[in-house]
Length: 169
Image 1: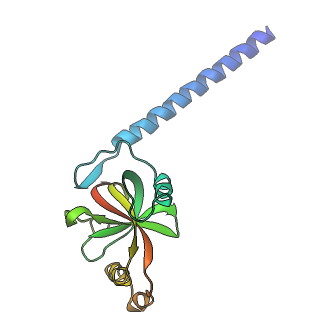
Image 2: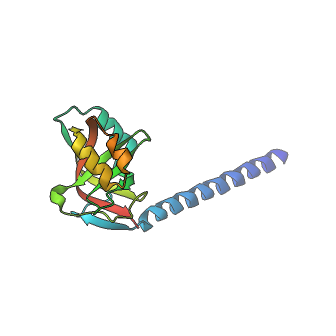
Image 3: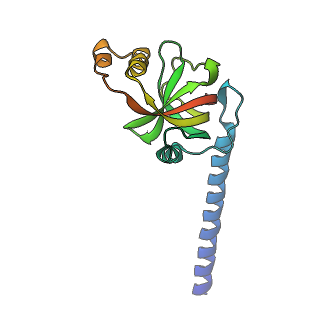
């Protein structure tokens, strides 16, 4: 009789655990379905997206002159404060981000998009950004004259020309 009670107890615990796990999965999938986006540029989907860490690894393997088509999920670190014509996005490493410009200046991001979560699609590549361009970006980013004057050397940049962006509402 004691063995039977232990068996029933274990069975009940297992059933409750399975039920809780099923409810957890349903909540997670429901949350993903309810996410809505603002769309900029070409219409893109939220399917087949890689993480920002996977994107960082892809950049590690690129050499100057290489280009790859990508779509990844990340956050906006900074947006051009002048007109929203570029953004710097998070690659999971605080010391490095990617510079995103928009294909044919066909669209811009809202000026208040800093820290928004996005999906960005486009063509990624490595380039050397000139001192003049770095100073221009710093000025558009709202940096002080003192900070801008400190820019004296070109930089290797992780870059992307985006055809479309989805931004979480």
